[in-house]
Image 1 (cartoon, one colour):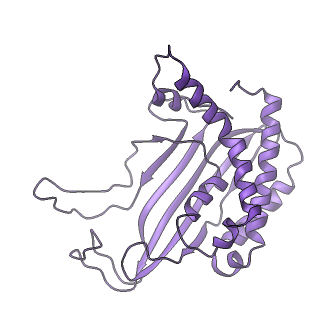
Image 2 (cartoon, rainbow, N blue to C red):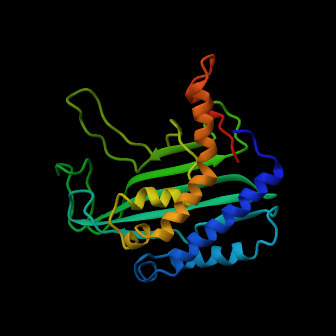
Image 3 (cartoon, rainbow, N blue to C red):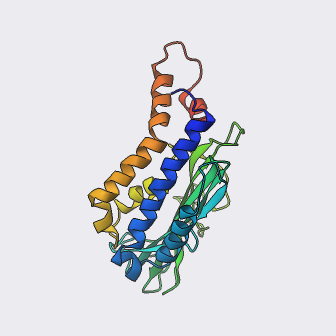
Amino acid sequence: MPSLNAKEKRKRIKDYISNLQKTFRLFAADQGVRSRCNGMLTSCSKNIDLLSNIGKSNQSFEISIDPNWIIPIENNVCGINGSTELKVGGYIRIKSGILQDQSINICLLFKPKDDISHENSYSTYAMSKDEYEVIRRFHFDYDTALIENDRPRSHMQYGGKYIDRVADEGKGNYRLMHGLKLPRIPYPPYDITLIIDLFLRQFRTPLKPIIEGNQWRRLVCESERLWLSGYYDEINNHLSSASRTTTLHERQYQHLDW
């Protein structure tokens, strides 16, 4: 896909702003969001006002998921008696009408209803009753200014809370450290609409009626057009070249569509 010129990029940002507004408005109007999803109404309302005041497509601004969204998960994801929540945060920065960078963070928080010991078959470390634990954490980044060869511009990174050591048949100890910087896994450039759709289709939440509706599907399809069509065209063109000497991962590292 040929690179877009500045005018075309600003047009795409204009379309993107429109799609974001519709996404935030859909959430803000939903009764399930208002009654059960802490932070979502306030955050979405603030961003609706912000985007409504964007006068020109070449303006600079930042969209922040603040306060974070807390979405209760209704199915038991751990096999332990307790409650799980999806926590969503992050930001999107636009500079002079062109996407500069974004980072969308997703956490799964679990609160057991009973004390959990090390020996529990479902847990690798002890948890205290009614205390929240981070059991999974992901973030999805896209940085148009990034030039480091070991950091894909568009990537997904996995992280989580430090856990106690667990013996592995005498072969060593297992640790999960949240401060580990690598690997950053090349990933298609997902915006918040695509990321929310990805997660909410895998868990039962109060937002299930939204994602099953045609209005939501249209918003997701528009995000796919804006964010993914150029990416997959680029990947297809790369893999179709019989004379290429650059690997797919090398090409993904340098992806820059916006």
